[in-house]
Length: 352
Image (cartoon, rainbow, N blue to C red):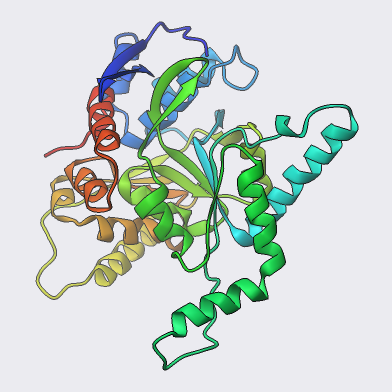
C-alpha cells in the first residue's frame, strides 16, 4: 500500500505495533479534517489506505473528501472498499457456488483451486432457519434443529465444505441467531487488525451485508449498509464499490428518555423526524451529550431502522458505551484495547 501523503504512524496494543494511516497527520495539510463528521473520517481513511495511483482511488479522491463541503450536492464519485462482507444463507450460497465454479475454471486452465478465495473476510450467517415442527415439549428446540439439518442437508454439507475449503470464509450455523444480532454481538470488530504486505495494520471495521437492515451495525460505530448479492460478491473478490461522496445529516441527541418510554417509542419518533426532513440516499450521524444516556441496544434499534427513514446509514460514533458493550458481549481484552486506542488516535472517539 502506498503512502503518498506520508501519514503512516503506529500504535502499540497488547505488546504489538500496529501501523495505521493517521488522519491527524493528514489534518496538518488539510485542516478541514478536524471538523469532518465521524462517518466521513471513516470514508477518508478508507480512501487513504486504498490509494492505488488512481486505478480505483487517486489523490484527487482523497482531497475531495478531505475538503468535504457539508452543503454541497453529492456529485464526486469515489470507490469504497469494505473491510468485510456479511452474507445471509439465501444470498450467500450462490456466492459460494460462484467461488466453487471459479475454482473449477481455474483448474481447467491449469491453475490451482487454492488460488480462489474471498479477498476480504466473508461471513455467512444461516438465520431465520429453524421452523417450529415440534412444540410443547422440553426437547422441542433440539428436535427442531435436527429436523432443520435433515431438511436442508445438501445445502449445509455444501456450506460445510466451503467453510473448510476457502480462506477468509466463516459460516455461522443455524439456530445461533439472526444475522444482524450475530454481526453485532460476535462478528463486528469495530477496528480491524490484519497483515497487509507483511505489516500489521489497524483500520476501521466497515461492512457490506446482503440485507437492507445491515445498518444495525452502525449502532456500534461500524459503517455499513445493505447491498445486492452481486455487489457483495464483487467486494468479496476485491472490487471496490463506486459511490458518490455522501451528504451527511447530523441528528443531535440531548437529555435522556423519561421513565416508561421505550426504545420503540424513541425510534418511531426518530423515523418520523428524519422522514419529514428528507434523508434518502444520505448518511445520518447521531451526536450530542444525549448519546451517553443511550444504551447500545437502543442505538442499534435506531440504526437498524435506516431503511425505514431512507438513509444509507444512521451511524453512532465509538465511545465508552461501545467499549462497555464490547466487554459485555465477551470480546477479547486486546481487541477492546485496540478499538479504544485506535479511535482516540484517529479522532474517532466521542466524549462529552
